[in-house]
Length: 124
Ligand SMILES: [Zn+2]
Image (cartoon, rainbow, N blue to C red):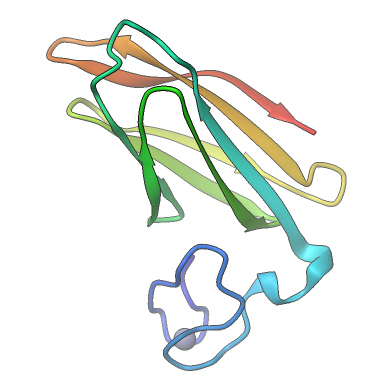
């Protein structure tokens, strides 16, 4: 998430900009949704970690059999998964009817190593 006032990168889930104090869309409770990213337990490609970014800000590292979750505003977002191979970018759109999204990730064998592949996107 980028501050609309000063342009600096904000931590995921931030309600205010840590630099200029400007409110973010998450300051309103009715504008807060949730994203969950689940990487299933796999024997194949298990050792390759994937980094996860939401709107250019790192959310964390997704290892084998782990889950990442974060508050996210009800709007459009770019989710990026990186590995040793080509990044995978997925756009999601949350709104008042789709406040909660779960993305299921599996490692898929590429040329050099396993790369992230999206198995399913489920809106709740
Ligand atoms: Zn700011």
